[in-house]
Amino acid sequence: MLPEVWSFTNNSETTALISRKTPSGEEYVVLNQEMKEKNHQGGVRHKSSVNEKRVYATGGPLCPIKVLKLFISKQNPNATMMFNKYDEKALTNPDTTNPWYVDKALAKRTFETFMRDISAAAGLSQRFTAHCLRATAITAMSDAGIEVRHIMFWSGHKHEGSIRS
Image 1: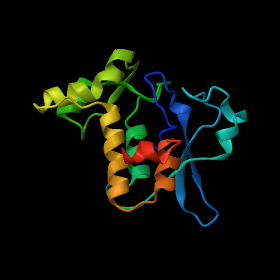
Image 2: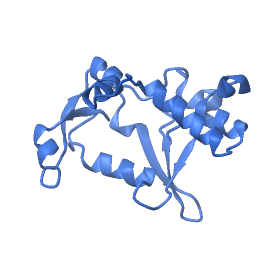
Image 3: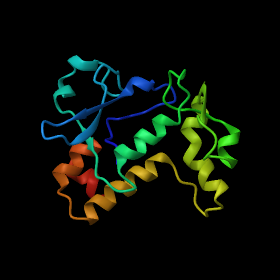
Image 4: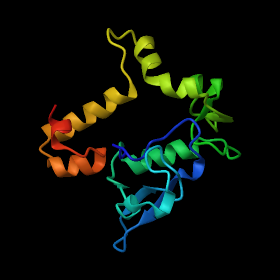
């Protein structure tokens, strides 16, 4: 799960993520602190910048670092935005098409409605949103026994009641 403070938009730049390693060699990714965020316009000088939220490599096929690297490797090398339109050929020939994305950023509407559109295309009885994914991830963490204070750190919630409702 990506931290709540990693509020990506259709105009997030390719420099938004930074890959690092701990002294012991564990790989992780952080949000570029120079980036201005929706709720924290102060960039690196903002008081919350010391609370660096990290996503660590876990190994295995669904490792978040591995998935991010794959996503980045499929971007057009000339792209300056993180989220771009896909190349139609990549849908039918993903193994032979590289890059999968063209050098054209997604429109704001496309970015904001992607989960709703996916829900409709899949024929689901309910329309899901990106917020639904966030709420599901928080519930899954709580059900898995993760302490509320840790969930609050990742989700950005200020009050325990918001997590429990």
